[in-house]
Image (cartoon, rainbow, N blue to C red; front, side):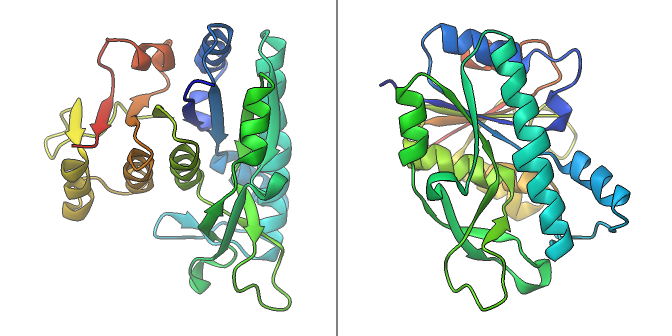
Amino acid sequence: MAAAIVVKIGGSTLGSHDTTLEDIVTLQKQGRAVVVVHGGGKLITDWLKKQGVASRFVQGERVTDGPTLEVVTSVLAGLVNKDIVSALNSRGGRAAGISGVDGALIEGRIAEREKGYVGAVSRVNTGIVDSLMTAGFVPVIAPIGLNTDGRAPGEPATLNFNADTIAGEVAAAIGAERLVFLTDVAGILDKSGALLPRLTSAEAQAMVTSGVASGGMIPKVRACLRALDGGGTTCIVDGREPHALVRSLAATVVGTTIEAR
């Protein structure tokens, strides 16, 4: 089986006029192996409000207590995941929704106590992803995983993982040929706000170290660097642009490409 393309999508790339899902189906019909990892932060916040639970963030990550974890799991592994899967299948694709819990795909531990039940990845077991791709499906992965390393009595069996991090870890584990982040910005920008079309891994790391890449861009850059360990290339593109995914795989330069050199 040919090396896969891992696509990270979020709420900003799934609007009513979006072409991301159409692009994924197109790639699948072309015989390309595609794996989707999704987030859903805005919807989680909306549902937490409905439950009367306040959202709190530390270093850009949602602090996840017990009630928050229940909502996160329900929204990510339920609502968001099944919406994406049904949309892909209704467009003529073949997709199957899973989370990092299924097949013990993602195993981890609590990252930092101050963030609650937020996970740090210990292992990625790719069996279920490999099986789905071999059977001709697009695996659609929700970033909920197992709490297996150092789990204390009373702690939940599952953890909330950063979706960007999961995309990078999955891409590295399966040896993806490319990791594409579809986000709501043009790519990585320099200090003056100009788009940087190409970066080496060292240059990308320097962007994080210097603080030029900040906020939500940090986990994306780090995930790209992790994915490069698997031998592929990575890019961060504006998923709001028409057919940004397909264009990112063509000769057309869109967004920021990070290469291991």
